[in-house]
Image 1 (tube, one colour):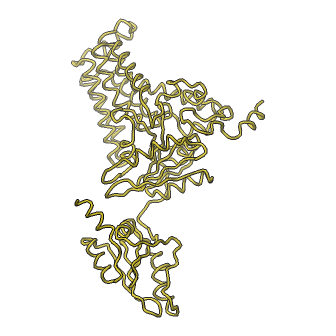
Image 2: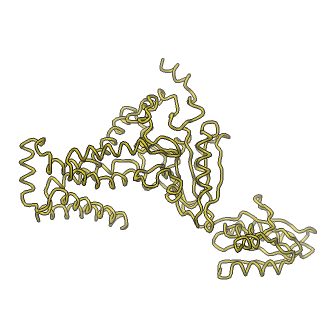
Length: 497
């Protein structure tokens, strides 16, 4: 009953008396020193009006030039009540709409004797300029990244696709924060069932507020206990546009400098925007290098433990003698030795991220060299262990997706534990378990293991290697795009026939 009463109170109509409306505004914003209520008269009839807005969320130039100046100074010879010269204007009549407008940075104009107020778009909150993305650097791609303003992020995407088929659907998430979320897609390409499922999951979110895209992705993902990221989070407009053209959806979250790309597959996290800006042979080599790095980052410490603990007979004799000599002074078993070094590496990595950039780089380089050398001289770890940990760290840095890199860093520890218990057999069991999980995993109802499981030969042209662009005339089948054929297939075939 209290909730129904509260909703009824918020839906009350605006009073016809101006002083009553001002009193209501002051009651709704009791501890708000940034609330501005500007009362004045306008027109020859000296109509009483009040302009209400939150200082800091509005554009002062727009307020002064388009609202206050026309109504206070340019209206002395006008019989009727003048209106501001702002094109974006709407009329509201309930206090719920008034509250939402003021909190969103808009200006509300009340008139004496009228039960309706006019809302003007004068938003102008602090925001940063468009800069190069921090996490996704590119050699040949555009040096523009998303910012914390959703409208600007939409404009960045529209610049790449000035097409009427680019559709945008807006949703509001959160009871208190009321975060705007936009779903962008190409209507003649994107599958409607995937869109329906995405909208359904966003509408089911019932929380106070969504702060960033990571929170939204966690609420709408298929498997909430999987270590693998099920959506692509990117800061690059060009990367998001390439996914739109393939038939995927881009979710823009207001106040967040990254967007969500859905649905995603496991192999899509190994693709980079630079892959399509260089020769296809070079791009294929780098793509293969990333998959090799993934295997090294996941399995190398576990293989080291398995060879020393169980399967030392497969190690060549000279190499085994060198490892034994290096471990002669080490008092810990291989598992504990690897755990200590991996945890120390993760601590130095996190310390480098949290500290200022110049200091963080110094701590990462000098700290790694000093700690590693001192640990070897003290006999805590072996030289070969330092090499294994350093190779693992370098391999994890090669992965273009930060989320996938963190997943590999986490999975490395259970793989090491399986290797210490069962040797190579444990590694095989752990790896097969991961493969089974990847096959069963889905992203918005789309198979996460595609194009390997289920196998799709056509999509293999842009998986482990990248075929020439003129040969990839079909969109990925994993996106279930309505329009499968890319434009220009006939022209490209004539050119290369």
